[in-house]
Length: 103
Image 1 (cartoon, helix red, strand yellow):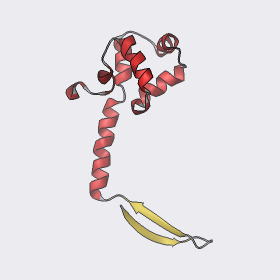
Image 2: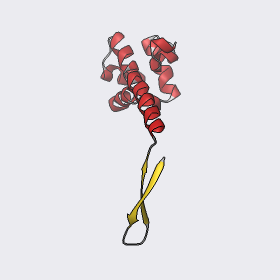
Image 3: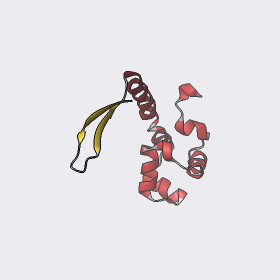
């Protein structure tokens, strides 16, 4: 990170701006693109199983928004929910989050 001193505010505190270096920015973009490519894995398996979000929520006894959140942010899915999804969709837990090329 490169940190630039900009100014002081009214209370005398330093205002700084932090910018990532070129290498850090490139690494972030690459990791973000990998993360984006994995975001719909749960949704893909749900569609293959022919289930709606509401149906999955009813079967797993979760709220519909919880299921939708798990599909949109798979990095934050609890292991217990992954176990339920893997049983429901009849796939290994690894297949729920990893692209087929990584298996």
